[in-house]
Image 1 (cartoon, rainbow, N blue to C red):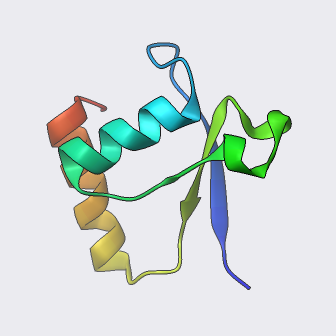
Image 2 (image 1 turned 90 degrees about the horizontal axis):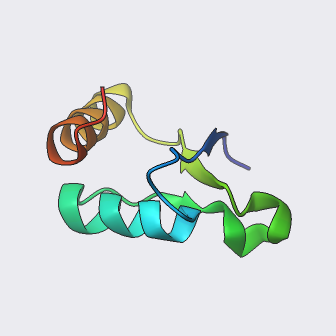
Amino acid sequence: VGMFVWAKIPNTYKTGFELSDAVLYKANVFITPGGIFGNAGDGFVRISLCSKKEVLLQAIERIKNKLGFA
């Protein structure tokens, strides 16, 4: 059992796979493309909340700094 957030991908990305690859390779943070769960997840990514708050905050900062998300 885990806690997850489903997030709609920005219009600048075609798929959740494209966004999750960018986040992984640029910010060294793993998020799951929603498409692996079926067609209904294609426009989304799934983010696990099963880490300490400090780890999640570090991941958010890396994503913001490396991909320009505010």
